[in-house]
Image (cartoon, rainbow, N blue to C red; front, top):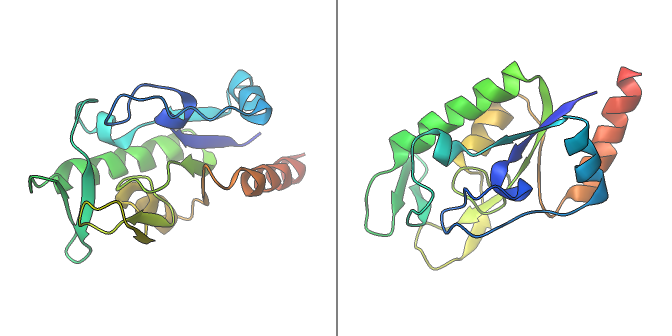
Length: 159
């Protein structure tokens, strides 16, 4: 039975930068939690950033630059968090990841534009990009149906 790396905030852990709950509630997720198939992880907190922290955005892609609104360069912490997330996903043999959308770490397909105006653009957060680079399929909280179908196929192929 495959495991899923999950943004810890989506499982109700108080790790989001504003300390607010982001918990996804769904019977299938609860079943997987009881089965020990969910692997909660927050790249920012794992890299040493505090829970109460200013928002950050990807300011430029090449070379990568992630800053907070005041311009503080947070790139090293975000890169370290991405490396740690990959290590955990590989160690736990996660077959995919369920990540928080729009996050400069976890956003699988959309992030904010780097201007701190909350304008979403196509692109991936640094952790999402690292997981994708290593072949780990990604889903966000708007893609639960797709995640459930993917996991059903995983479970069928493992049986």
